[in-house]
Image 1 (cartoon, rainbow, N blue to C red):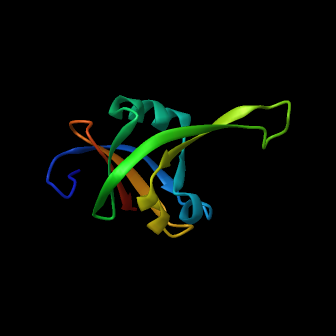
Image 2 (cartoon, rainbow, N blue to C red):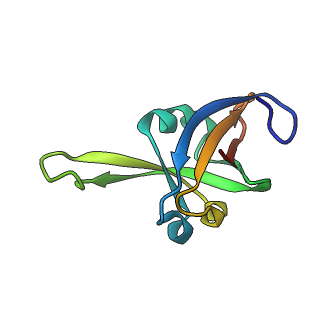
Length: 106
């Protein structure tokens, strides 16, 4: 697979955009995806639908499954993600050099 610059990309995962993403700029990802993206560092280049910006990883402890089942939610966070429509499926792709994250409509 190639990105807009022609370099090979590695699929990270496919996600459905939450209704909250437009408001908070956070796209929820799995813990497996978060671990794969840690190599990008605290802040990293992001491309969403051809627009470039900067993103970061964040997490939030949660008890949405009940107080006896605490867990953590993981997110990619960027103002660029606010442009994604709720319910849209997107693919998260890491460029072959691991220097940026690409988010494209599936």
